[in-house]
Amino acid sequence: MAAGARLVVLGKQGAGKGTQCLSLSHHYVVTHVSTGDMLREAVKQGTGLGKKAKELMDRGELLGDDLIMEMVSGRLAESDTKDRGFILDGCPRTVEQARMLADLLAPVDLDLVIDIEVPTSQVLRRLASRRVCVDCGANYSLQARPLIGWTCDVCGGEVVQREDDTEEAISRRLEIYEIQTAPLIDWYRERGQLAQVAGTGLPDTVTKRIVRAIEDRSNRKGGRFT
Ligand code: ADP
Image 1 (cartoon, rainbow, N blue to C red):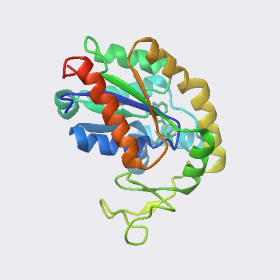
Image 2: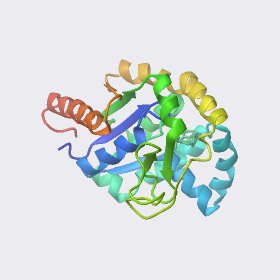
Image 3: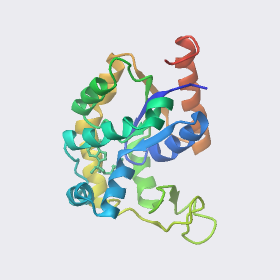
């Protein structure tokens, strides 16, 4: 068990970040902080942030670094994430956000950045069949449906296709990923914070690979992260 783990999970759209972060958050009893889920909630609530975010999200464009980091820093200042740690999903997405995150967390660093690797041909197939719960964000697909109709097994919410999972927005998000987010992999590797894990195969198999990578890192640091 990695007490007080502070993790970032990277990966292309459809690499399985949401699914894996949920499993990891249960395994390590730490909070899953997803910027995408937070923004979708803001859109649903019709807040000022939600209104700004909606159009950019539907087009697959990124929101500004300052706006995102303000939202993330607020969330990381809350007691659950402060005391027990967090699994950050969807942020950082640019090198500038990574720098801002490091400043925010200083003097303590991230424990590990996990990059889930899946070939683009496979993420395209996954995204076309992806369905999500509008209330809790649980992931499903045409192949792995909820038990009853399109009602979420976890919370009973409605399971739908995401509004930004259109062919156009997906290809724009993957393009932005290559330009803005992929450089983060080298950035974290150079800092000795990166573990790369194959994201192919069954979700449980991928979770086991990630847990092994986290335990390896934790053991090398003397059994504890912090
Ligand atoms: P995906 O990984 O499939 O693109 P997310 O749920 O992580 O989906 O994010 C959905 C959208 O929210 C992004 O396309 C982007 O518009 C916005 N967003 C989320 N996180 C960030 C971030 N760190 N920086 C900028 N925009 C973000």
